[in-house]
Image: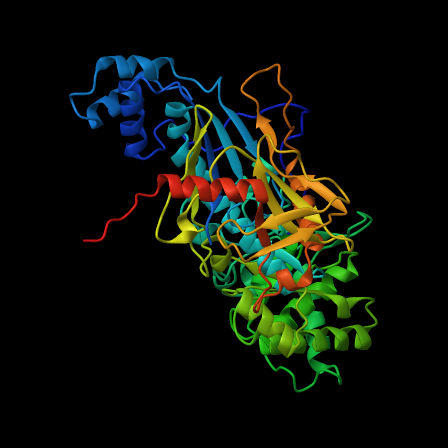
Length: 530
């Protein structure tokens, strides 16, 4: 059906209530509560802590507290549960890279500051909410990149998603079949019918209401079914279409006719229930031409199986034949939508083969993120009571970057981002046209001077912890989507290519580099050989 704008009206500075009933105070791992108790027991629970959330490659009610009390050891003191009853996030601050931005490994997506017990309790909910949303938005953007800018992309994944909480706005997809997502987020809806609708009809005799008023309301066709049959006969005996098909499936014709009677302005038919070129496409054309007689314009067809490249090209040829034979303007431009377990590889193959598809419906491989099912975000303590902390590992990729940091994106003379750089909070920010040394956090030989033409600070305060402190306003969803598209267009093409992309550089300042390695040596135990 035709896409329509949905969703609530935007209200400036209005914070909506939670939209996901699964997000409760208990959406957490047990070790968050065991650590919170240990912090409380050690009287450390109010110490100011800073955590970074990045990727490598609320108040509690009596019911929740009773459950936690039953889950923790009996030796835990009752005072801790009194603490939970009074806990809130009034002293928590959240800094984030604005939604829709391109982000890279090691650069914090979020920086969370506040009492360590409270912030620790936020770890699992934040990771749970951010991991999947960021992953599926990235997946959507990758599919858009392969499909090309001119193609309409449709999200068809609700039935294959891992539960209703998987409903998400996909940054670079334009429409969705998910009605709840349309209601909540204002995403345009798109959908027609399934194979079950087609196969539920047996014959044209089942259609009881046969009349259809013209689009301008000036007249009424009393027997739309007969008009469709007449057009099918004309198509069959047309000298340009002879030999393409013989007798079409009449139950399919009945389904198409019935659907057109219900939705004359939004007629899009699924044409592969029986045979695409011998039945589905001719039946669709007969109904579309009958609608055209009454002033309506059909939307197009959907292909859900078979050789999509070949069938789309053959369908397009047939549409052009209809336009030429019967003089129906723009019939050759009839929309063709393809679905059927599409992924990046099949989209790329279709582009190489050549096709006539105008829109792609992407489901399973999009919402399940089949190619990479997890993003791997982590939540690491980087500072407590103004003291930087570091997490060490024999695997260098798991070594954290300590201290409260500021993050910047440096742009070159051609307008592309060159490098992201992290600095200590109190370091002077990089300045436009001034040379700055950018160092790899862990590899001493990887370093470069950069003279940026533009400097952009990445982390913005979205939750200040105090009503007196300024905060960023979260823009409407469609603005976030537009920002995402703009961000992707700003990236250098070699960073974005599917095969062997050039790694984007993430660096630290010279001062932060020296401090990381000082702290590393200070914290790592010295071995002893016997």
